Image (cartoon, rainbow over all chains, first blue to last red; front, side, top):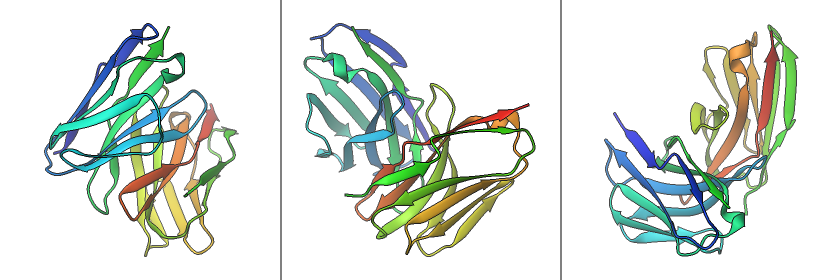
Length: 111
Length: 111
């Protein structure tokens, strides 16, 4: 069966520090991969999605970036965090026509 | 750009009551529509997936309907239980493997 792992689960980082959130998927090949952010009291905002290795599409211009170095690995990064980057980050995967599966999420607090 | 709206934002009902959650979307060219459940601080769990050619899906006490032409979906929960308390989100998948989420309905079932 397919599983998705996301880490770290919680993170407290100072303003201006770098960020790296990692996500891996097991049990499937060539998945579509996504990073979403969920701010308090708001819906899910699509940040990045990828349909293949090295193929990244960005929905919202920001100081975040994403990379897909391997088929089932998706990384969310920042060189310098802002206070506004605080939120709940969710990694997800899907295959054509099927449901989207989410990781357990990563809580990021920028202080 | 696809916009997904959910009404009401919050709902509180006594245990045993039947209830309906509403979801609307602006672009009817969807691939499918899904309903998710999110417990506090957790990722999303898929409840029901309705393909664009379908009108409804049922799972246990849950029934979801889809009227693609009018851009509407409803999630019906029968005989609500305290364990149903959570946030319910709907999402549509456009062609291009992009998922757009509503802001959710926070449900509280009072024992």
